[in-house]
Amino acid sequence: MHFDDSSGVPLFRQVANQLGEAIAAGVYGEGEQVPSTTEISAAYRINPATVLKGMNLLVDQGLLEKRRGLGMFVTAGAGRRAQRAKREEFLDTGLKQFIGEAKRLGFDADELVELIRKGYAS
Image (cartoon, rainbow, N blue to C red):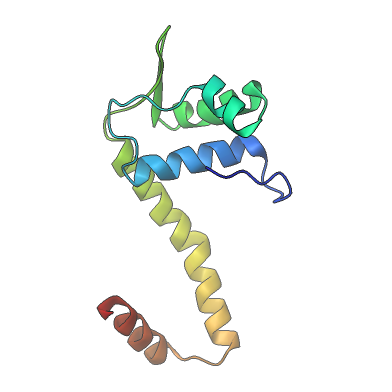
């Protein structure tokens, strides 16, 4: 994990985003325990309340569940839900930005499709 307090993204959101990405990538599988609030806060020198706030976002999204006295665990189906959310985020922001920049640079749709095909083939 890497946290950037100068990025403009609140640290609790960075915690949630990075844990969510790790879940989507399968780093933490269904039923697995994620690092504790204490472990993350000590390793990255982040206030434990900030880490907990980020983790609670993932609880609200149904990606993590609290097990009293044990910690936070990845819920069933969390990997698929996290990946679906990342895909939607990409379509809503990343793809729109990519297309906008391509238009500004003078690419037409056919050129972009061909470049994407070549990129997938390599």
